[in-house]
Length: 384
Image 1 (cartoon, rainbow, N blue to C red):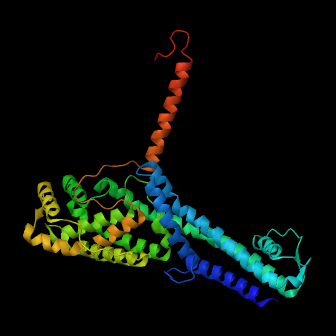
Image 2: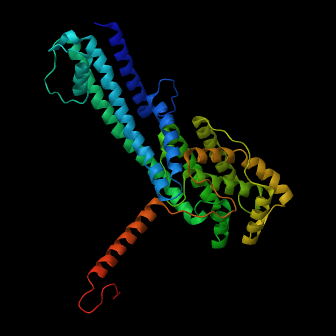
Image 3: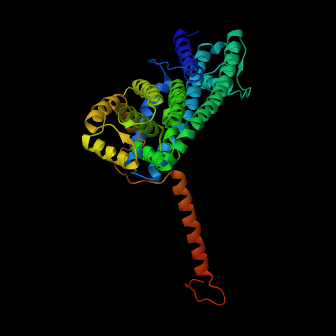
């Protein structure tokens, strides 16, 4: 045996198996220096985000950024299999005396390792010795296991993604897109359902706990983008936390207990996710002039409010605990941040823009056909 090749191959195999185990199986963050998934995500996202931003706003940008997370899962599978094949190829190269015919070079043993990991078994190279047979069988078992775990991983990711999006979709009707706490509170006042605000906050308290659990267990979920107009889970959480903070510090006559619980759980969510990603940003992000305008709008909507000089210091202090972190996460993932009072120009979602583009293309095709074939009673180039 050649010890150096054997040790290098064993290291590659252990690296892949440990990374798959910690990425797919372990339901908690597992930072480490030798994590393939961690380094691949960190390096690829910077370049992908830069490319998406260079394309500007709108359909092209969202299309590029939207396919990153699914593409990353496929890239991880390919990377794991490639390193696994390389590792078993090195181990088999150290044991090449037990193969028939004896491989002449490393490339042949890597080829045999690939047929073993992918369970192809062409039979042009055979394991004759006991150690080589054990290695070939182990390679086949590891290959099947990695593929099966990634398939299970995909089902878990998409299930968690769909559960995350349900409340985000319903929030759009209440708070606009991107969502705004002021619009949310105005909508409830306009519809006469302010008594249901505690129930809304309770739903988002449970949502925060569930999404925190899934996004810490599977960090790649943070890179999955919403397919809805100007929406993201970051902006949605920010809008709900802003509404809860306004209820706690500014609005009278609405139960503050559930709003406080939601603010605590949501703030914990923002803190844990931003710490995991390695982001930190301080400040409330709202100026006194912005708050005065919000105070005026809420008063117009019919809410009984605390005086501005009492409400503003309490609101600024409470919002500073989470807003900076959410803004940093929105910047990192290149998703819309929560609105405050200002109106922002909306950009259509990928789904809506694709539908509109397809409709326009079909209509243009029909117009061209009509012009080309005017019919017996119509001159070319005229409309029926």
